[in-house]
Image 1 (cartoon, helix red, strand yellow):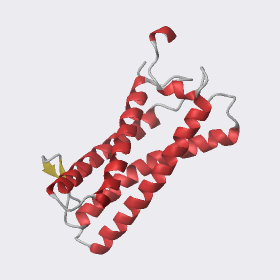
Image 2: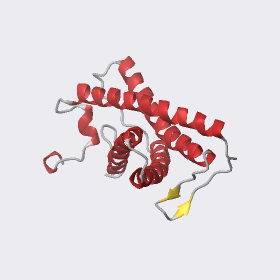
Image 3: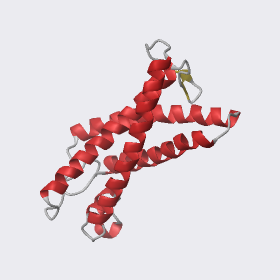
Image 4: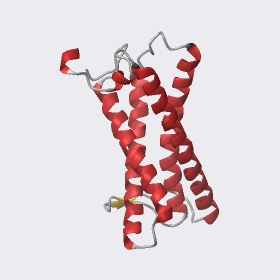
Length: 183
């Protein structure tokens, strides 16, 4: 089952969801770690990797948005009240939006600071942005604050998934592969 169904997510959505979630968690941890690492070759390498993975995340997020537009969401269970359904849709949309804003702001920050990313050491990904401490600083502020907001949304999203998902027919099971006994 590639596409989403009326009551469950298909394998494409599941793989994108868990891959992006894993990458975002690693990116948040590595981004936070920069503040505690001394200047070193390791820190520089970690930042280079962070930039490459961030740009890859941007591509995955754009694929995810395209998949979502082409493949509508399954309906939430009827026992979830209307305001919670609206909140769930809003949180999902913000997760997508922030998952795009963070890598773009990081990219802009790097280019404006004259440190354009080298995607996994293969090629440079620049932007038509003039060197500017002002632009780099503001992009850094956006990058940082939206990352904190994203972390809060992840906590909210995960909490709601567990709150509504622990029962046998709960929403959390819709994002997990079907067990053979369920088929």
